[in-house]
Image (spheres, rainbow, N blue to C red):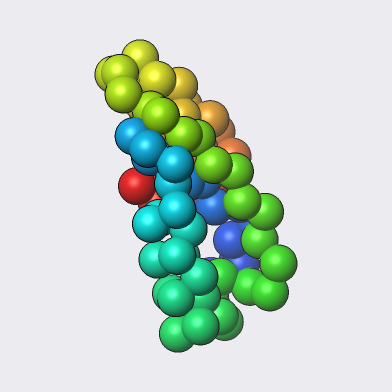
Length: 68
């Protein structure tokens, strides 16, 4: 089994509420993979390529999951 996720990054061009709701629903079905208490970081109002690149760089270096 894969190591449980420690951090989930939510990226949105708005508030991120839809992404947060989607992740919560997925956690119910895939709790063994996601783990009990992953840390969430929400990046709101991401609208430029530069902003996206910064989020991706952070996620890759920490092996985090990105949800958008």
